[in-house]
Image 1 (tube, rainbow, N blue to C red):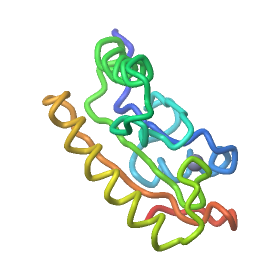
Image 2: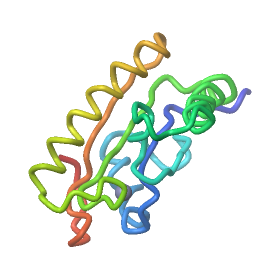
Image 3: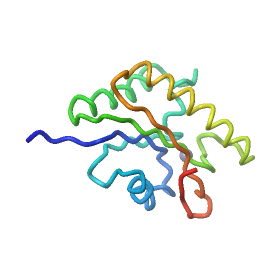
Image 4: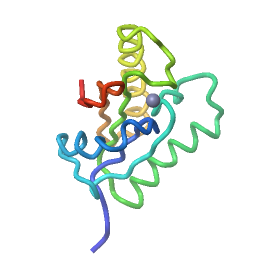
Length: 135
Ligand SMILES: [Zn+2]
């Protein structure tokens, strides 16, 4: 029987997310062992940023292609989080609005590149307090 999993999760590398991330994903129907995980500073923030070098963009897109080819994923989940150092925005509302805009652009970008994958996004809140939950 071929091995496989449901999704590829792209999340920020922030250490404060590690302990609770499995529980957050479990509430979305993704148990440990049912997803591949890519951790990058700022999650997929750089995909559309001019300061990301082509090889960085290529590397992230390759992870998606490999997860699809090797593990048969049917969806990609891109997660941002509040109090993210990669965003470096002190004002919560401004950070939240910036992330919502980025995630909407990332959804369009990835949907155009991966027509057969379901592309979802979310924002994890409570990073500074440790009371993590999805917005
Ligand atoms: Zn972060």
